[in-house]
Length: 160
Image 1 (cartoon, rainbow, N blue to C red):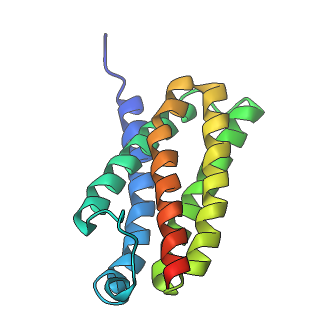
Image 2 (cartoon, helix red, strand yellow):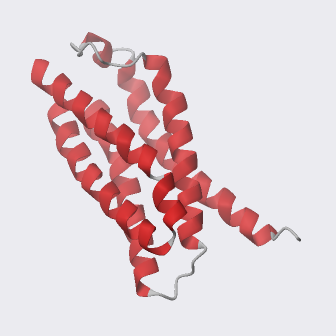
């Protein structure tokens, strides 16, 4: 079976789009993670700082593959286009969370942002399952991690 270079390019583009969202978010995170964030009181279940980078890189890669799978179903059907629009919205909200939490140094705004993000991810998962079940499954680790992050964000907000 011949490899379709166009499809390989689409996979790479989809992964790079998602990793770019992570890069944008990391710009705001980096400015606060070693200063303001260190001073916050955190719950006992807070993971070690070194874990966040590898987890997010992996999640963005899975999101990129999910995006590719949904994108590969074509853009002719309105439900496919809608799924991709919802994906883009949640990706923007993903980067926005870092701006709200770390950039503004506001656990409260971060909590509001991550709550809206979680809803957008859930809608994306549902839409992706409808056009490519595998793409929906690939997003499950993402929504689980964001669920955990939302709980962590909530506790940081409450104790600070």
